[in-house]
Length: 283
Image: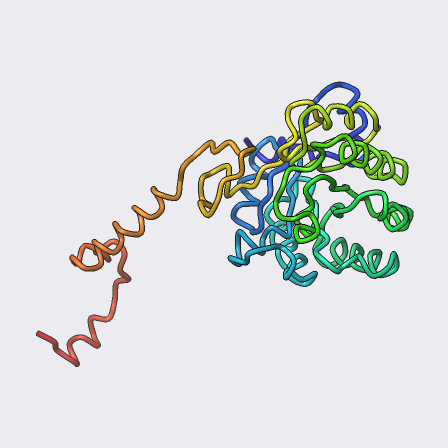
């Protein structure tokens, strides 16, 4: 797709897209080259997620990721995707202390990272904090269900909302976030039926990440889509490509050429140096 013809999706347009039944796609990436590729696609959103801790840094969880690291990666993505809405993730302990801390962190992601909006994990408990951020003119995407920053409290990476009590809480969380002005909510790892009820209960756009088809859009990680991250593959992921073996094969091909003398070939070398070779003849 020619990026010159791609119009950047605006925050106010999400309510119209939902009313028209048009679904949106959010792809998670962390760097300039991948951002450029997403910008050439028809995807409306890019998420710069704190999942970079696991996918890029090789950590066991997302909790060690810092605000500065999110800003660094968001800045790179912004440069690569001028025509795509960029969502900057709020990492663990960048918003939990107070609404004032949350606003300051969100402001940095927007001002220093160049994001168009921020994403925040948490339900109705964080509604007052989100209200403060939205009131300051910063668009917020919520995130409920499986919230990776809280995996210890949740007992691990588990599906949420399977019991009636959990489902009711998720619905209450979604409504609370909707009331304070989020434009979208990520629903991660919850039953499709619960996601359907939530989607019909709120005005914000729901974006599923393991939440079934009855939502306003879907989010997947580029490394999962392309088969690059093979440490584990969540049940909800569809791998559209399997590039890891091809890339490893390319590396091995280079090693073979280096060892055999096939690389570099003459076309990979710079010309010149004849004078110095005459001064220092080498057999």
